[in-house]
Image (cartoon, rainbow, N blue to C red):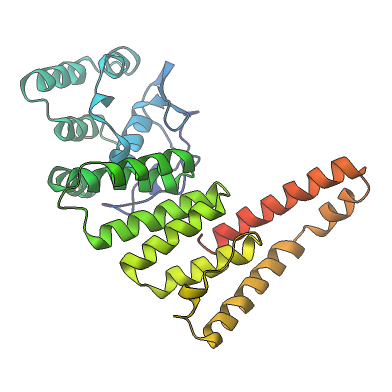
Length: 296
């Protein structure tokens, strides 16, 4: 059984095109040969131990793949570790003649026979979107994947690069609003509340969605040092703000008292220095857990 990605083969790609997997820590039931030298994926800090794992990675992380993914190291892995000389020769010929990375990725999935015809059809739909999408749209899709995998710093860096890059037709008002919103989520994940607030404000300017105002409200409740923008809250009735406050308090109490009482008690038995560090760590954990529950 593979020791890299762990996910059941039957559930590997049931969501089809646009599927977003929670992580790569499930179970893969590998029927193929296991490798002696796994293929590293540095960006996600994982290694691929079989042809099935290579397929799973390509299928679910296609938007993360750069053109240099098809390189000599991968070709060596396919030929030597997977023992698929014919596939390696086909890929090499295709690279020489056409340099079509989407077609090469599809070819790999076809030859390893890990996914069904229906799943391959869904993957092909993703590849067609990649071909048609503007550079900004492809880059944002990658940043969104990094955000989903909690690679917050890398996501912020890519969002910034998109915003500062050459404008294209994909960068509509709605697109930029979504970009600023997702960057705000990434900044919140890094506990950079002021940057997150600034991003959410810019997102609201573009999208004017009440849900963003709620996120701003929740963010300011979580971080007492972040002041609630008065001008933006004028757009929200006091009754609605009261409901948000009740929701925040309910969630906070849940996080505070669900199995945490013992941890708090143990902190007070420590000396003042260790107690202060422990309290800070506990609060950080609560805030992160709350952000996930509140989808911040």
